[in-house]
Image 1 (cartoon, rainbow, N blue to C red):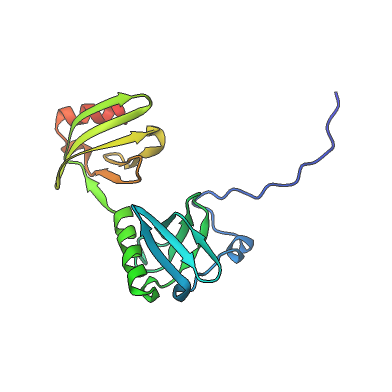
Image 2: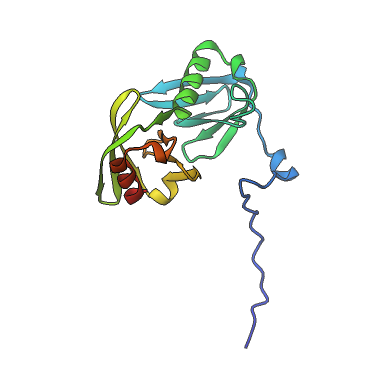
Length: 187
């Protein structure tokens, strides 16, 4: 029995969400100067130009500290979900860019509460939902339910659709029996 004595270069460690960032990883954090950022929309897509540096054809905005500092420290990510950098104080963005960024953050973190599940249909690896919400009836589509349906508590369900919109079943026990049955069958 022979063993291969060649070694492959070490791959960087993959961090789990609960692990703190190493000093080397923290040193790679890029703080963006709000004065050099220009956000604009192309249809429904948010884009970014960094003055004298680069442009991103699609960006997503995430709150770095969504609970403790929801209006500060926004992570700007490109279309491949790679971090472009962090804006520490979005209030320092020029007014039109600030308006677009804040609208994107509000859209991203909007949770629509599901009051009743009307119908659920599985088709070609996707699930189409028709639900009643406080704003009326709506339809949405999910894919890969193992990743897009979360249970933060035993009675709460968070469902993310293919467009990144999030739907919240606050208390499973308060749903009508038909809604409970549909949710259990498809979540």
